[in-house]
Image 1 (cartoon, rainbow, N blue to C red):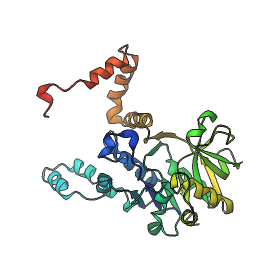
Image 2: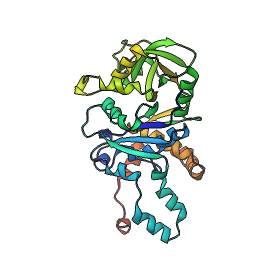
Image 3: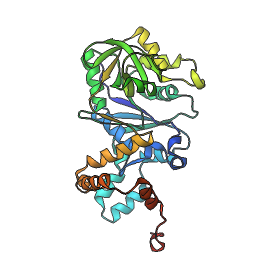
Image 4: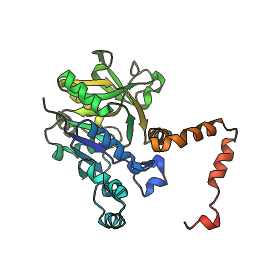
Length: 312
């Protein structure tokens, strides 16, 4: 069985929930303290043994593309000043993995975004993780998916989690048969199902490990709702004639494309860092125990900077 050594990270979305910030900065570049969201996604797949990553970018995302390329002027200055630790951080994006950037020139759907990577990936199995979806787990969720594929003898595997049934309509609802406590044979995935359209509590999230046949299914898809090519439709087509499993992963998941999910991810990432957690934990306890009304806190944060600090 061919090992998984390449990953696809779609990053084509507009990120309208984060306007006005995303008017000029891609949502995948939102910081987790000092590291972009997309960096954490790529670090996850690298932990799973991936050597090559295909980032599917889009027009207007020059800042995302630049993260994976050298910045000679910045590096020269840091080197001249002897700031070697900062230099290593500046080079992180270009050294995470062998990154190839391809572009989805028009917003034709998330399935079309994955299909843009076909020429680079070829006929190899690959991981696919959304560029704004974060997990914290040991081993990483990507590594869990790869391990599940190996245990099952191949085939595509969807990352899944259990959600309250009333919340299933926010996700892709999975229908199928249980193989064991954490593994299901997928019959179909219903994207954002209506209430009672899908029984159970199993949701498709975060990503997949795919056999290369998914590209064939995507290439044959006709535009669905909104005139777009949807990855879920291609997965359902694949499941009709090939094995597709869902694996309920262990770990925490954060939707960094959602404002609340992003804030949770930032807090979790900061608390996971010893250099920040020691001071942050007591401050959070004090903040949560404070009787200062939320409106007053918001007003304080919105006050303009003092005149002597405005030009710093």
